[in-house]
Length: 318
Ligand SMILES: [Cu+2]
Image (cartoon, rainbow, N blue to C red; front, side, top):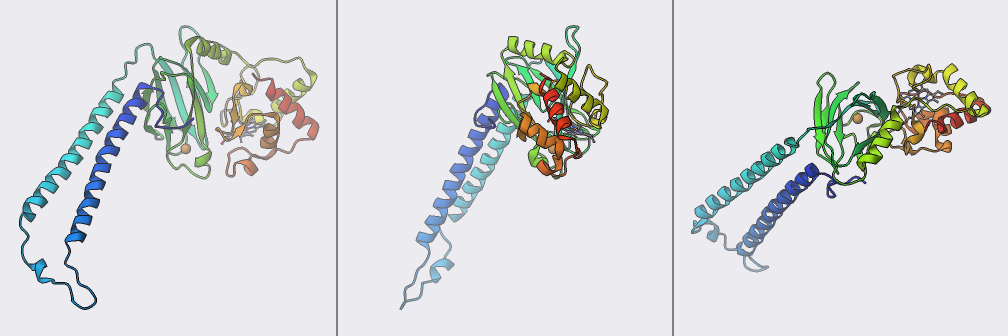
């Protein structure tokens, strides 16, 4: 789900309140402008086919017109100032989320996918995931934002407003999910060819479920004794894949593309673009630019047997 009208956290609720205030004020102004137009049209001198309009009426100064203009100007200024005040109050409320015991995640925007690096915590190691974050419900999350190449924008409308990710200028955004669910995020700053296909999701889990997920993600890749999967692993490690991708627990430690250690635990591939299943994985590996033109992963020609084995192995990376 991706909607600013259905807040799942305290901050998104404040943003929604601001939206309601803005919408109300603007609707009232719009209605007043329409009424004033109608009033002016009704009072305008009018003629018909035989008699021309009596324009001399226009030349006499209208009574009270000055007062009308002054009152209108003052009301407009008050309306604008009230919106400004509501804006500042909302902004302050957003930045005042308590962050004791926060979860720390470093989010980096790449053309055109997301890396989330979870900080080590309570003696446990940190770990990296791509395009799918899990967070515990009720616990604040401090996300430090980085960009690897161009400007991207972190935006999960159900949880918070937008924040730019600017290369060389780190910033942070803090949010808290108060309701369990899966919330879609989207890059909100045009960042090149595949900007529209640069999505991610934030899955808010009850705390125990989050802890289980994090413990799972911390582990190195599962090993399989299945001969086909083992062959797929060799295809991966001996081909180009390992140059760009990390699979913890194997020699593959590239950092150009997403960490694939627990690829099979993710719902989608290619930054929220395709469902993660064997069919899409095979199509993706064979020719990524055909599915996501401009993508930074080259096509790979593999013998059908090798491709199948590779997909089977990727499927074991739970
Ligand atoms: Cu982007």
